[in-house]
Length: 259
Image (spheres, rainbow, N blue to C red):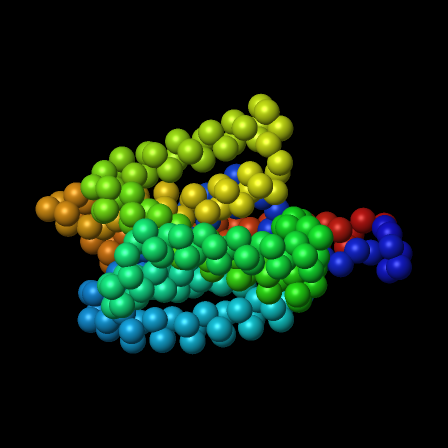
């Protein structure tokens, strides 16, 4: 075992694995359907839903920042909630204030680019493997918020304004993600760039399939409804996070037993 002086700060976000991408896509899918459920099915409206969820998100982020290390339940709770809030931000701009989807896509692209520029200027890296200070974690979560809002705007723009439908839109974004993966594994695309591009595009990918499952058939969906769709994906997320938590506990116990 290494001495206390040799220990490095713990990373506060998870490693990028298959499980990471699986739960991330589920989280963004649920973010889309849960936002619709709260605002429409429960009749809270966009404004009230946004205020409530922003308050819940603040509490979740306080819990996440308090961990000082990666804790599955705290991290993924924040991701799910920031997915809901990111969706609501875009929906408010478009539906409440009448901002065009083209405009919101451009605005959030610029906001994300400025976040990355400030992050790099401050830390000289955009790597998610070294999120071990509060300042880096602030940049990280700010970038995550803008990726969700940007992904919502871009997904809605392609699916609705271009009238391609939810399935076609999901397949398009899935294909682009596949090309990014090919560029990374076969042609040496920079890992940090590949990660953030894929992270942005999994938002409209998940949202498109969430809408496909939840929206009525007359609107191009399969008609399962937001309640059923949200509960299914929530159950899957809880199961995977529980598995991650138990696995980490088992690994920690094994490490303590090693002389």
